[in-house]
Length: 175
Image (tube, rainbow, N blue to C red):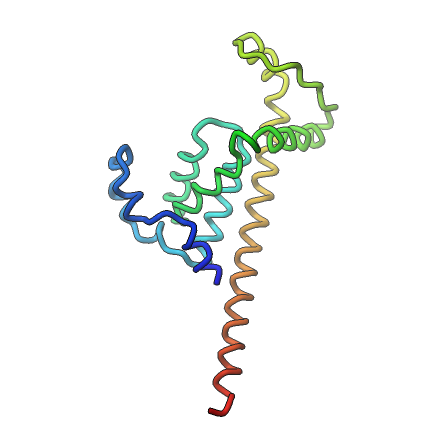
């Protein structure tokens, strides 16, 4: 069930390998371990995807892809999970991370001034907010990743045990 459900929503590995612009990663993309769906690769993909989703930076997908290739997690799932933080959800996610960072540092949360698209606004505002934001992001990402890693292993194992028990019952039934 978990494998079939995940497989239904993931893109085809062959299509990804043929995508223009990533051919330079050829040898890495042809490693079969980054395309398999098993308990370990899925759990590592959730750990990676949810961690990088929490970090406010450009190119989260690239960071997730390189991390997935390095530790042999499912590449497509790692990159797809980064999209939880999208232009609609980024604000609430990063604000929550900022609040967590201020709690850890013991600083009161500052009122964020009205947003302006200017270098002056970015340099003054982010100068005050970056430390609690990134600290909170790392802590939240680590906790989300670790909890998802453990839960994936647990749910997957319970599913396998349930299927074994159902097969035992079916074998014992008289025909």
